Image (cartoon, rainbow, N blue to C red; front, side):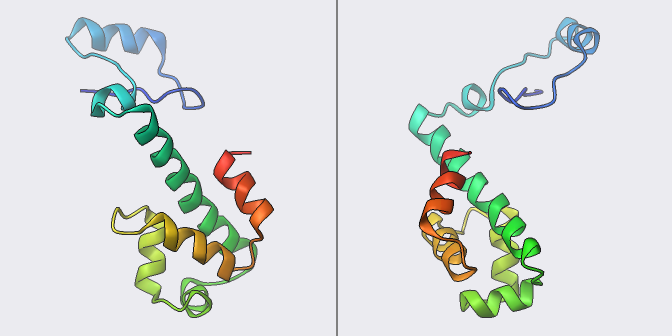
Length: 115
């Protein structure tokens, strides 16, 4: 069943949406589809922002995953998992990794806030 993400996502062509609805497809938010609480939804959004930001910071600094892993005191495969949003990666590790790559607390606060 297709799921339409909330604001900020690419919207589906209205005609296509109507055709799919006529065939029995239902559209909802990810939150509704997964039955998430407001807190769970916000936590996931924060984790995704940290994941995307980590990759952006690494690339901005001109670092490969191997070099970033050394600065974080981890492995290249772990950095790849962090950047891919692997569920085994904790928010704690994402935050500590940002600090290891030189991100300061005020900037990290803006990342978490989505600014």
